[in-house]
Amino acid sequence: MEKGSKAMMEETSDSVKTEIYFPETEEDNQNPSKTEKEDDGGDSSKTEVSPCETEEKGLAKKVSWILSKKEDPTMAPLPDIELGKIWRQLAWERKNKLFQAYGMDTLDPNFDWNGLREFILNVSEYFHTYVDRVKVIEIDVHDLWDELMLLAKVTPAHLPEQDKIVDIVLFAREQGLIHRWRHGMLEEAITSEGTILWTDLPFLVQDLKKTWFISQTDLDQVLRHNLAAFTARLCAKDICGNELAFCALWLLRKALETPRRVSRPYYRLRTSLVEMLPACVVWFQFCGYKLLNLALDNLTFSTSIYFTKDDVKFTAPAKLAVKSGVEGRGFSLTRWVFWRERFGELCRCEDGEVAIMAKYGFDAMIRAEKQMEEESDGEDEYPDPMNDTNIGIVSDDFLDQVMRTMQELTMDKDPDDGDDDDDDEAADPGASLDNGID
Image 1 (cartoon, rainbow, N blue to C red):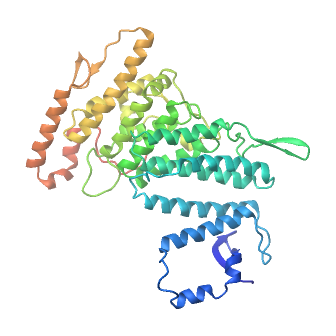
Image 2 (image 1 turned 180 degrees about the horizontal axis):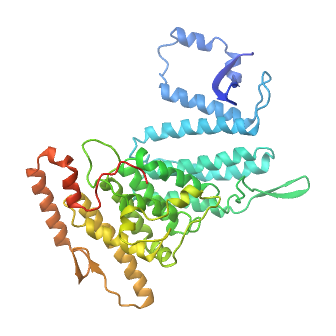
Image 3 (image 1 turned 60 degrees about the vertical axis):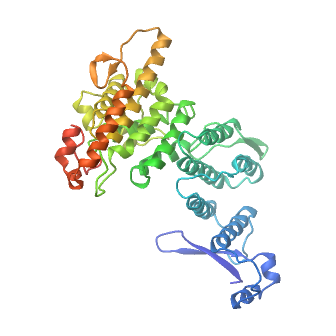
């Protein structure tokens, strides 16, 4: 086999593997001894290149080879699916390096937002230029959503940069239906699942849903909070219709309806409630009014291109909600009231962090109800989580009292007392430890 740089081993079946080689660049062919000289030491006055930068250049070289569709004469042309697998892996390597460069919790202030828009335009241009590479277009779309979700995770929930990410999604949708002439006929960009590029924003719902499914174990509290803010913004703007509300229902079911430890345990068996509450609260802060409307409409989810039968099962109420009389799958007013009462119950929790976050969630739900009341000219009364006979929202005095109590507990508490399951259950009747998965 002629000289080339080996990129990867792609498994095409259970027993056969295909070696994929990328041709050397013209510059490499003209300077065959360049690498050997540099390995022997080379000129010490030259600027040193970091391993990360060298690897990035290598990835760029491989991606350039794929896009230019160069064919290695020593191997047969790759089918669409194999080419797509290579592109997908290289894209993930690039995004993972970006993720590490951002430090997991910060966004590069010099991030090129226009580069994302250009990428969307390039995908459309690719559809016009290459008639036999539809699979690669779908992979590019997946790659775009993955990168936007990555940015959302490392962008603080309340920063305006989150809105910029949403604007990128809107920019993609505004491209509308793209088409091309082929064999004398007008061919539209229809994906393998039957959705239209870019009008239907194909694969966005599925990719977000998968990200949320792994968020319970793979994301920490901050990244989950940021991702929830991004998803809630999309849902509030009616992007993808009501389908993204599934992510909210899944999260609220896991956090508020499933028995779990309230505070962070000293040993980590599963995600605690305090780690999931910020993500729940931000859903009501950015999308509370729409969620209330969905509850009034008794929205349910059925099997479709977006949701499997197993997904639909997760829309049924969990253990704590069932005990409170919540019935039926999907959103309902009874379920909304249960969530509000659950926040009110957690406002009285001994864990100050839980109490404060629950207060924010309760207030956000009340604001959504008041907004609905103003539009309907109603005069409904709203409960106080500390006293159901009073009208109003938890006062700031209560927050001060919670903070003082938390400080006293921090000073006087024995560290070993925090592992007692009975104490956790006394603070919250629904906080028993449950190591199973609903």
